[in-house]
Image (cartoon, rainbow, N blue to C red; front, side, top):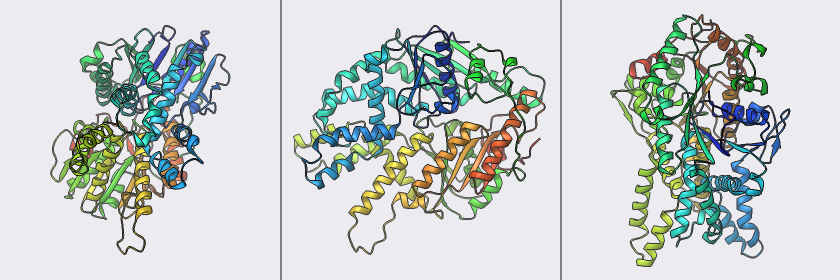
Length: 591
């Protein structure tokens, strides 16, 4: 187990979604505070749940954690950060510029890219605010899922490089001159992240092949940007609790994944944390994780609670209804680590197996569709939106269209503008829109990035929609269909929210549903994945976890979903077309 009390000033917890970053970050911060250290806990996750784990309402201001001396927390709220960022740029010129020009600036600053850079601005401000940092012995960061975090950690270097060469105008971020004022701060942030004496990066992973492969990719990418002081935390390891077939199979699968983990991880110092029968919510549960309190002293009251009103529904029943339309966009959304990729692949494989032409694709930077499918399947095509490829394509297209009539200086300025990191937002959005159009002719099953990242993409889609509607010719008889209109049309798009039967994933799925509804998008169904309650087990630990799942499944069936399915936890990892299709035909029932 990692020595929680021997840590540098800055500790980042990152990894694939759903692996327990928040639990470990909160437990570490609590342990340090309990041993007399002054600690600041920072969340940079757009879908932060630090407040739920700590059972204290936390916002974008320093908040003392109830019942803990010397521990403060703050959640970087991307929307609040973006609002403040826009005001810093627009405020000084309000009343000095014509209204039309002011509106144009505000519109330029309304995209997802501005939201991301504003959150990054808050992040670097924390790292370089010496007056604030000096108040604390340790600053613990609970970060967004890996793909988002890698972008965040790369941004200081990306923006420093962009400003170093900057001759253009980064319009979506405001005047370039304003960014140049931040050059020293960004450079200081880069130096702090790369300093092994002051920064540790904890890679959190479940003992599963996909999570360990993702952690290995992250380790390599972080090394490339100079962050080499890394530690591997294996979380949720199945303990030896008996000879139940499901428990034994899970232990065997986990041990094999650990034994075969990539070399990039084998070389790292490691810690291991056992799977618990209870949710890690509240101070008492967190102290068990760090070894401060013996589990036998923790009176975890786990009871069956409320059961769902009816038998648990199988995934195949949802596929039957999806199939009836013969085409359309099927989007899988949810918190990272809930199994969106597996469920997306299962739905796509089943539809293809029934003879439909299906495109299975992903917007997740950390996607592993190919590993999940394992082999080619007739009628099924697999693709992914690769940001690097889309940026290259977008730059080439823009230079060919807009750059052809420019002089040498004009082309140089256009090339400089296209080197802005904001270009990725536009490029990825265009690829997203192309996939949406394909769904008018066939099934497109889309595995999306974890919630926060996906909502930024949908924000870009909404911004594009509003812009098109605003500039549409008055009185035009041509009916325009924007990507957002397709997402809002239940005949064209069906959203499946994927979750686990645990308190935090269900709450976050409900928050996602509320966000979608505010955008005029009504989720079609929920899928509760990897449910112990839907599997057969005699293992005491798993039985306790199964009992704790029932109230959450009841909440999904009664409060949140108009239709839902429950997929049982599998003894063998569901990879390959045969096992994926089998997920659609498993009967579910509580045991």
